[in-house]
Length: 336
Ligand SMILES: N[C@@H](CCC(=O)N[C@@H](CS)C(=O)NCC(=O)O)C(=O)O
Image (cartoon, rainbow, N blue to C red; front, top):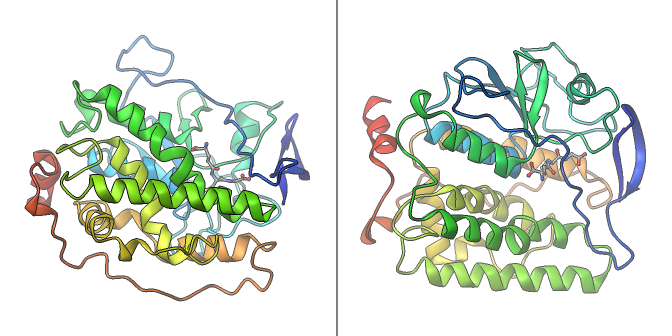
């Protein structure tokens, strides 16, 4: 599949092939990697009302940042704009007339790539979401979802609630789990979907379902991935699981099993979906339309699959296990 990207600040369609010579999907590194710090003298100090997220509601990586923002109660501290779920030849676009999408309220751009060029007129790389934008210095702080998630979770101390998702004493395990879930699951669905050969596809699918089987076992007697506390690792798994049966199972041919056929993963998914603030970050129309309509090489007629219409709000059984979400997350339920 040919990929569009910026080269030296110019938009180039058909910039390169997304698979290597063995037909394996190659994901490009992201280019902006600065950090917000809880220090007023830092280059990017944590402040309320200063930073802005550009996201797609379709994207599992961007979704990590929205869930973190919701669970840490940062909705009034960090603003968000939402691109059109359909990514055409010109890349992510702002089309406020589209339901669930917004204009670019910070810069008034029509295309997300304009933010990349504004941040670096010579930029080379893909124009991806999420983007964390600094309205003070008019630049991109970071466009790597795991790092944005970590910054929202750890740098905004006084502006956030106290529901830390990277608690002391669990940090190594959280980092290891995020890594363990990334290659076979978060990226694995893409490696299956975008594989250019039968072997590359089958290897990706085998690794994906081995990993899902593993976490299904872990979640049999443990409430979350890292024990009885909710962490960033759960957010990383959640945003792939919520898309799985509607999109990855069919569109990316990850069809050995559905998540709803794994009792523990399914109940875990429902619990996370039902945490206060999380359901509002899930837009299944944007998710399905994006994937089925944008990847025309996988789905040339762009027909959007309709099933399976899961009820993520249905009862779950996770309360049988020790632990639970942090109190400041559940406390919000009483307020809402
Ligand atoms: N490593 C990045 C990946 C982000 C990413 O690939 N986002 C996709 C949407 S799901 C995107 O914007 N793709 C546009 C493109 O590749 O042109 C992250 O985790 O933030």
